[in-house]
Image (spheres, rainbow, N blue to C red):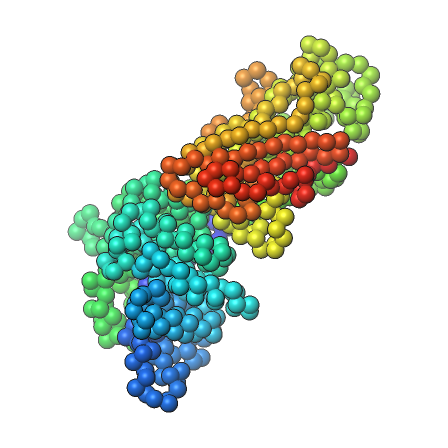
Length: 585
């Protein structure tokens, strides 16, 4: 059953699949793995015989090669729906599109095209591409990108298999360290221009690197995580109860929480024997009482999913908004509907007592519906309380609004909040980057957004950016700001943009904020802010990322500008507010 079927879970289902063998009849493969008791949810199966080589077909002379291709059968059994929902195509592992051997290279190009065309014809959701065998994978990436660029064939994803250790094949020389694995993936996706249908499937082989070596993969488009049967172990006499190391459990739990599918791969040593066993004993179609031979392994993974902390009712209601980009608020131009305020007021920490107190104050509180910058107060106030903080602190024009309202306050009056600081943090955010790219408007990459960030990697601790204090000590103080920040990135990564947070001092030692290290517990009113980069920046392990940030003001608007100057320079985003601003009137 889907891993996501558990009480109170309204999230996307997580599924568990099995990497399996080639058979000319996909019906047999499905009967052996899915249509039986405690079966898996999908199979990762080859579509073509592993012994086929186009160069050997020349012996057939004028007979059409296409008529003799050793594909698995694709008639009406299985049905189109089964192909689409139960089968991930596995591209032949032997292909080497960058081989110096011309025959092998040409055979590889031909087979890759034939298998992808077959998968597209069957309407498969995805195909698993074999691991690159060389440091230079330009031809491999070029051929893959040719498919990705085809119009009308953009519904199928391609999953590039990348090991987290040293494979037992010719590619082991290029995967000496965990960092090498990420570099090969990064090179491949750069050659494919960060295409949204190119994803990565991580293969942990028989060992898992240290915790910090997985940091590079957080925020990346990880479609699936492959676990081999020899990674499991037993602790007693019961061979049907499997366990995983704590380190591996932690990694699987992370990927499960980020809607990554899990694939069980059988021990390659016994793979041939298992094939013969399946063919001899499991050839009858239909559901029966046989139990899948790998069910102890799948039960172990299902148990990990069941142990995930359940989402609260509020978190479940917001699940659909994870990594969903929203435009920033225009406080002087937008009129938020009642439902928007109601959703904000659902925050328990912020509004628990609000409605209880409103009735008590009806006789002593007068509501004045007017722009605070232009209102003439009848007398000076002892306390000025405002609710103008945005997800980036000053992005909803709190400085400009409170500057205009400061004249209401006595000289020794108190402002709540008394100060607030914005924070900035570099992130890997493939999903957010892809969403902006899909808009096909280059200026969208120079626009600030709000988002409930989930599938992101926070690459370095956040740093303070701009601070505003109220009441101001001088009316001549400008609200323009500039700052240069430098972040040391501990692991190689791609920077897609910057997350923004705030921390506010309300009064004395009472604070409210979203900055991760000191965020106020239970406060979910504010999303994270997001400043994208038009072109993602590759940062190597231990190097410094230098970013420059400006808050600019004129008589009609306020806007941000930003750029990266190291390790490689970017353009200055949103120059002169050409893409985004907050209007003052």
